[in-house]
Length: 60
Image (cartoon, rainbow, N blue to C red):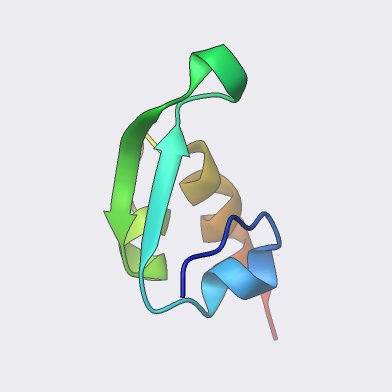
């Protein structure tokens, strides 16, 4: 299944993430990061990764 998602709980539980960006609309359109939630969280180029990194370290 492929979904466009912004909910961090959903992203953190995904099997595989393809992070598109680096921004939205005309500023997006290229693959910024791909892999498991941990892979994307560890990618310094990924804006989603920076939010995901915080989410993964603070989630119960």
